[in-house]
Structure formats: C-alpha cells, structure tokens
Length: 343
Length: 264
Image (cartoon, rainbow over all chains, first blue to last red; front, side, top):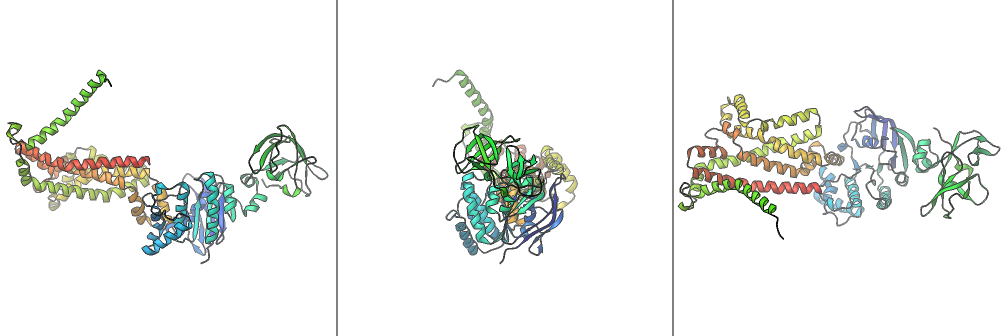
C-alpha cells in the first residue's frame, strides 16, 4: 500500500464568534511525507489539523484523501490515527486495552488483536507494560502508548497535535529522534502541529508556517531557515539581526557600525542575517561595536554587540573565548549570507 | 495529659446530642423485640412480633424491593443519557431543564401524586398496577442520579476522550458505551444507590398512588402504626432498618471512593 496524499482545497473555517481561524487554505501533503505545521498560538494550526482529521468541518472548501472527497466524513470514518496533546488515554482501560481499542471497534478477533498489541508495545519500547494502569505511567510512556494506540489500526494518515509539548526538555529531545525514526520507517503520511521550531525542523520533511490563519510559507526546513518568505517567518524560525541601510557605498551598504558587503544592483531598505553567520574577527571586519553581554551556552556562546543601532546585534560564536564587557568587537559576514525580506 | 474543663463540657454536650438522636432508634428497636412494651423489658424479649410482621406484611417488602430495583433500572436508562445530553448542550435550555427536573423533589409528594392521578387515573389497569407507583418513584428520584452523574461527567475530560475514541473509529453509540459510561461508573453507582435508598423509603407519593393490592413497605408501616399494636409497628421498622442500613453504608463507601478518585 502506498501512502495517500492529503489535499485541502480552499478550506475556510470561522468560529461561532466570527473569528476566522483558517482563510482559504490550499495545501497538499504528499504521500509518505511528514508535514510540520508551525506557528504561534492562535495562528490556526490546530484548526487546520482538525480539518484534516475531520473533527472540524470547513465552512467552505474540500478535503481530499487521495482521490476521495472526505469533507463530509466524520473522523471515525476517515481512517486516521491521532495523537492528542494531552494524549487522551482512556483512564478506565490499561495500556493494552488502550492500544487494542481501535481494533476492537473494528471487530478484529482477539488473537489477532493481541498479536498486534505485542507488536506495537515492542515498537514503542513498552514490552511487559501491557497490564499497567494509565495512572502508573510517566509522561513519556503515556506519549508512547498514545502513539501505539493511534497506529494500531494501521491508519492511512497519522496526525499529531503538539505530540511532545507536555514533556520536559530532555525527554522531548529523546522522543523527538525516536518519533523521527518511527515515522520514517512507517511510510505513512503524517501531519503534526507544533509551536516549537526545533521540533518542526527536526521532524518535518516540509514545514508549513502559519500566521493568522494564512500560509506564511510552505517549504523545506532548510529553505524556511535560509530563505524565509517574510519577516514573520524569519523571526519565528530562529533569531534575526536587522540592519537599516543608510546609504550605498562603492562596495556595499552603509549601516550603523560599519559597511556591509553587497553586490546586488537593487538597494534594499533593510538587510538581515542570522546570528551564527556573524563572525568575530581579530582585526579587519565589516562592523565595529562593543560587547554588551556574553552568554555561555555550552557548544557556543551568544554575544550581544552594540554597533550603534536601535538593538544590539546577536552573535552566536562557537569560539568560546571570553570577552570583557565593553570590549571592542569586530564582526564580519560573507555577502551571500545577507538577505532581504518582503514585509 | 490534663484535659480542660471546656473539653469535658463539649464532650458531654456531644454525647447528649447523640443520645437525643439515637435513643429513639434504640427504643423503637427494643419495642419491636419486647414481649409487652407497656410492661417493659421485664416482660422478656421475643422474635414473635417480627414473625407476625413477616406473615402479614412480607408482600410489601418484596414489592418495595421490586419497585426500588425497577426504579433504579429506569432511572439509569433515562438518567445517564439525560445527564450526558445536559452536559453536552450546556446552554440556557439545558439549565432550565435541569431545574425543572428537580421540581418533583421540591414539590410536596402529595401534589405530584395528585397530578399523576388526575392525568392517568382513568386508565384502570395502569392505575391499579405497581407500574403506576414506579412512575412516581422515577419522577421523584431522577435528579438524584442525574446530578452526581453530571458532576462526574463535567470533571472528566470527556470531550477529549470522545474525540480520541472517534479517531479510533467509534461512532456516537459505541463512544457512549465504551467511553462515556465506563468513565462515569462511580457517579452512576452512587446515583443508583441513592435512588434505591430513596425509593425504598418513599412515602408521600406512594401513599397517594397505592391501592390495597400495591402496598409498599412504608405504606404498610403507616398502616400498622394506625391499626396494629405498637410492638408490631416497631418490629416492622426493624425490618426496614435491616434493609436500608447496608445500602447506606455502601453509599458512604462509594462516595469516599469518589472523592479519592478526584484527588488522583
């Protein structure tokens, strides 16, 4: 069986109070792909997921699974597996009871059910936990049970609503890579919602960044980071330094604190760069300023450098040399790492 | 440890109040077991009265049990879906309905019974069957099941659990029986015990609705108070207490378990 394509065509959803959660959304999720929907709270990402799931019905527009129009089908007839934010495990059933629930509903006979249950317990690394009560499980274990429960009936589509948000940072990191491996091994079309850009980058084949119910950008993680479509995307995915262009010079642009290399013909109002692309130089550089603060972060340190602009520049440096606060700092940047944005 | 005189006074007061409430119960029980209550305990203890009561009134005991069980079943079948609907709707209409449901409890039982008689009294075979009393009991006890079940439903994350159930392929009816009902078990159980207890002891409505052929225990009790010896009425009370006290203990145990569940 090949994984199916999900297609949203002109989907629009407004709530009873009149706020529009999703505006005329067109979206195609390719078969077998993992799509991350990323955005701040209230951007419509959860509504989009619920439209795909069938928990919400679009006011206008259609949802297709493959060639089938599923717009009018309720969730129970769409054959989707869903992992909910707080897992929504059934407290009246034990771990195995939760996992086989979907199979029971479909009338799968008991021996087959138990075999599938064992398979899934092994897949999520919870062998011998089948008879445990839900209350005895840790957060990470609950997350795995929720995943196993969603996967048990072999759904066509896997949907995850903030699957890792309820876990602490260390566990989140570990489960993230586990989830990544699992999704790649399954050949299943999956969509997940997150507000954590790191999670979206690590898990998503593509990322849909949403802003106020609209698509801000839909692209690969690399593209989203390196060629953000607009200032919102750039600011939401990672940190950003902005330089207001004061004047054109022979070889570049005059900005607060120095001169940036710029070879393009057009004259932008503002240019941007990522903090890790600014290099701290010994002598010659493009910008001069002085250190405001330095934060040691283990693998790298973050420097705040005042070059006379409205905000100090963020610089991520893997060179962990300590500078004195107030010390003069020279910064350089490669020309191709500067970019402009549409408003 | 030296106790203050205040403590002694408080203890005495508490014991007095307890005695004030418990002595009548003990007196009544003793009366049912004493050979001649007017002579006193010196006349000796006997089970004769109990046996006489059983011979005369055992049908009322069975009818009361039958009514209580039937009432519990009816209230469950009507009340659990009703509670579910009220919790799900949660609008002005549903809140008004909830208030309306409590009306038969607030109204004197005699008045509700009269209303039933005026409306359905003309249907002879229905009027003279025990089902007529059942209707009254169901009306009266319904809120005592719906309220605790609603409380449990509101506490649980039911909507989320139902969405999870739907995502796994369950339609509305399967969701109700596989998710809603099991997760409200404690509330339903507490409600059912309450309903059984109330139905067993219900007098006001029943007194108006009964016929000589459909006498329940409390009605029989009133009958025996009015017509028979005091010892017989007291022995009758003893039988009633034997039925009702275990139920009350179970009710207490369940509500204790409920509040534990809340903390978890």
